[in-house]
Length: 262
Image (cartoon, rainbow, N blue to C red):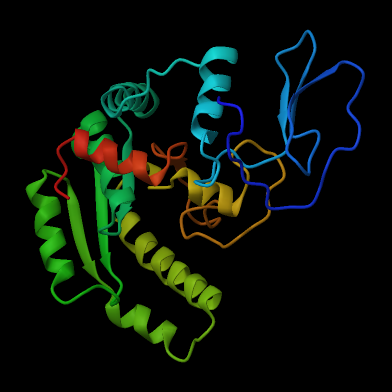
């Protein structure tokens, strides 16, 4: 990283004095201890944001640490993710039946195709019309799902959803109302599938970190998500989430690698 590289410091906090075993690596005109390392260790600290656009060499800094210091392998590709995930799903699910609620969106669709590759028609998809879709979207998307070879059932529950949403203004109240009706409708349909053992969800990593820590650490709830936080007591199904640890842009790349139409 070149001397004089621009970095973004959006706070006034500063470290006044470093420990004896620390080696100063970078300073600014206003912040003496902008970056340092612990002597004899691969422990580094920075007092700026490398992840933002304004830090011109931020991406390079992160790459230097991850690849050169932490020795992280850069071997993730959409194709490798598909192969690895399908293999894991086959081993985990075996011949069990899995139920998945399709929304028409990217996440649940990609999750469905991954699961279909792993277990075929043991995946039972339910596509619910919540009354909030665009004109003809329910029938058009249902046809697309059928054309993709998915084992899918369409359920028009628009009247139930709109009745529950009537008069609500608060966004969080709306989310919870939609979630409640969806669970009721979904449970009605899921109980018709004999011996279903698993509920599949299109949960992705941002859903997890906005709602609860994925690793058990402290995390504030930013907003609730319909597919995060467990199941009602009456839904005696185990949960499988093939996209839980990847981001939206990666989900799109995985979908494209499997030939899903944009």
